[in-house]
Image (cartoon, rainbow, N blue to C red; front, side, top):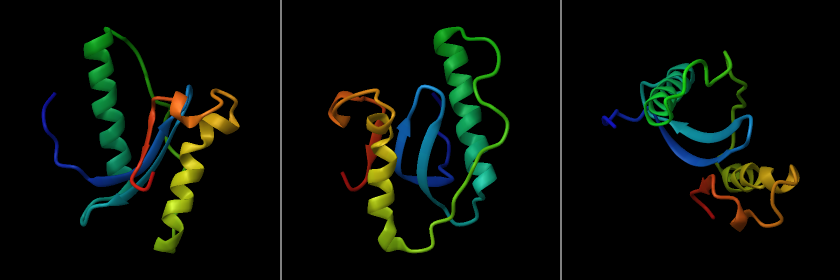
Length: 104
């Protein structure tokens, strides 16, 4: 896969069966729309290449929330990675492979 200059630093994420939660810090000069577009473009291209998948992967658009206080970031990261637990997908987050967080 080719290297691409990152538009955001990932602080936390979890990939759910039908959506993604992504906590990020945008790099200077980057936009949220640009970061999401880059993520969608690169992952779609890679899935098409690796899995011979055809067609759309992502829905149009996205939902966002701005975080105003840096002190809230660790708690928000914990909330994000706990999504598989709340959804009943696993009993322990250790059993779910598709997540990471800078603080955990």
